Image (cartoon, rainbow, N blue to C red; front, side, top):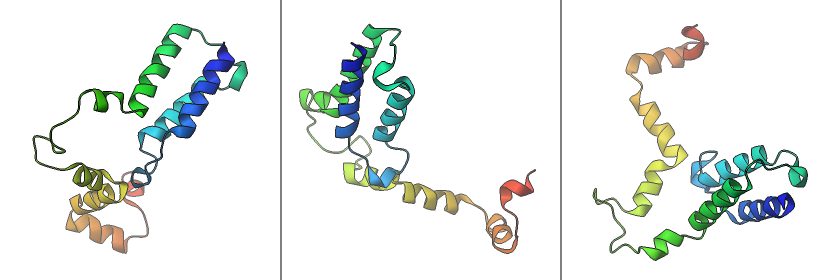
Length: 125
């Protein structure tokens, strides 16, 4: 039975899209990492709790197939803030988050990084 579970999870991982704007932070990447951890021995992995494993698979499959999005359709594509889905994706993109982190730095920190050979992490040590 572990072979069947393993293959179902592999198929789910193959179908799950990778969101390029969230490099290393998207749900598909996390799912792949968790499946790799859970099934370290591949098809030979012994599953301690098959019921919980099946429940996890079913939950992930519902997320992947947009089960709840289809079951409970939204009237508008905005949230209470008025921000659209596209705007949320743009803000949550890895590049945008890096720009925001850069903008948070003070002038002195930016100047120190620019003219110092050491990184700020090395300075704090």
